[in-house]
Amino acid sequence: MPASEPVRFGRKRALPSCPNPLFLQWLTDLRDEAKEKGLKIQYTYQKAINSLNKYPLPLKNAKEAKILQNFGDGICKILDDKLQRHYRQNGPNASIHSLPKGAPPPGRTYNNNNSSSNSLAPSRKRNDAGDAGKDRGGDGGTKKKKKREYIPQQRSGGYAVLLTLYRQQQIPGSKGYMFKMELQSEAQPLCDKSFSVPDLGSKYTAWSSVSTLIQKNLLIKTHNPARYSLTDEGLALAERLESVEKERRNVPVEVRRGAAAPEDEEEEDAVVDLTASDEESSSSSLAVRSDQSLSERASGETLSSGDAGGLPLPGKTQATMTTSRKPNRDCLLPGTYDVILCVDFIETTGGSHYRKQELVKELQRNGVGFDVRKLNVGDFLWVAREKVAPVPGQLRAPAGRELVLDYIIERKRMDDLCGSIIDGRFREQKFRLKRCGLRRPIYLVEGSSSSAAHLSLPEATLQQAIVNTQVVDGFFVKRVQDVRESAAYLTVMTRYLSKLYQNRTLVCRSRELEGDVPSDEEERGNPSCSLISFAEFNHGAVKNKCQTVREVFARQLMQISGLSGDKAAAILEQYGTPHSLLAAYEKCGSESEKEKLLSCIRYGKLKRNLGPALSRTVYQLYCTPGALT
Image (cartoon, rainbow, N blue to C red; front, side, top):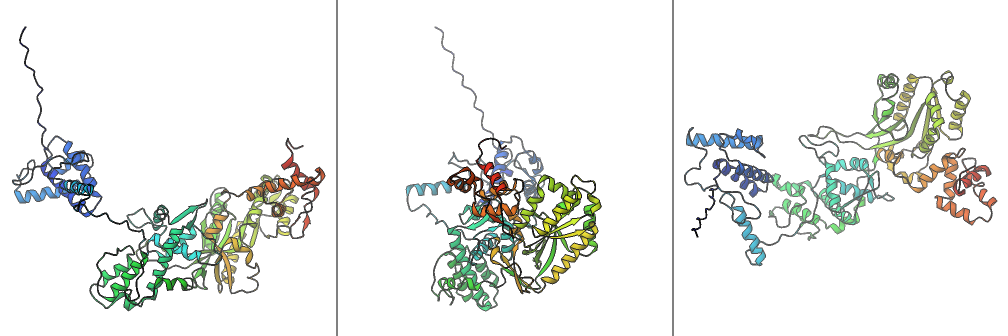
């Protein structure tokens, strides 16, 4: 038997070392330096190290490294600067493909599965040793840090939102929530950053902190349009922030700032940062002890009055918290606002572009200050806009509060009036204008009788609809001939309202409380009047918003021929839902009684009966199983 041939083992190729050890060492130093400072760029350097380790060819300069992944202009520029410094120190012919004498040899990068790191990544060994010490439970392990409570920094977006919602809840009869635009407008004076315009070089605004508040279970967002309200945890934190804010206002300026010393700037940081931990070193001066006590109280700790520099305890401030609010927070004083005409953007775009631009030009020619925006109901209205001084360092001035005056205009040309009567928009728009919360609806009818000659409806029908709008619905109707007269009427109304409200204090109210306010306060010369904010008005007038069963029921009833908004509202007062109406039909003893169930319901100002005909129609609609005859 022949001798067996010797076994040939495959040749093991030696793993080549990195052909660019100098670049690898520099990147590792940069990574370790960023890691010590806690910078996230350490991960970018680590990705660049991984790419460089995989590249088998030597690089002549850092620009050639741009072909590798994770090598951008910034890293290449840093490496080029280090390379030029290397040439100046070691000569223009110094090698870059070998390390200087005495330098540690480069190795592979660390990863999660390999605990033995090279000398270029020493931080991993220290972490492993620390983890092992913690696993053993020995004294060598680091003590687990206590999780700190989230407290927003003073004058930040989250700080302003919490305080604004808290102060709004302290108002007697408040609705307990705020809409986005309303919340941004109210919280802007409490914040240094803008809620709508990001700073230069950033895409984030102060409103971005709201997501953090929701994540920390301090804020809750419900409904559509969104309503923002405080949770129990957020209410408790906002209460502490309010007590701290009140104490800061009560502390004299000399006590807060201390004597004029070079370290004043450092001491003021303790006031601004409410998240300062209790373990931070404190100075012996009175200013630092006063400011530090405020920060500790925001964290929920109680201090004696001696430790707080003679400041009152938070428990004493909570009793007088509501009285410490500024008296003009929810009102606009005379001279602090301007009356601005708001024009729906539909009135300036689409359709006959020339005619709509003519309206804008006429308003500009008359010197009327107006603002084009989206109005969910009506075509024109007026707002009292708060005068706000621009903030230094911000591109735009913060948005001032806006309260809607009690005048709203729906503009109708003759052809538009004819079309709206045919498709049913005419009744729906009048119904929405009545429910929008403004007490002075106006119908501006544009066009002469001759312009109705060639329309789908007779001129008498259009004239009757206009008269019914004024007599039955109670709207003020203004007839004009053309666009120029419309612009003239808007100009006169703007000047009239500016004079009417110039000496009035405007108080912000909620739509839910609109029935508690007398509607004739303008005629009585009342020096103050209550108005709703523009944000709440526009959100409440959204046409396709999420509707309640009562609102859908009203829209169903209004589809019946001859059943107007007043009649539907009278039915809703007796039977708020279809279920309650059907339950009432079931209690009736006979068919005739069911048909006459709604006939005696009174509606409108004259309190007329609904009548048997409409009552029978409603009964047939909701109780007939088959098709209606």
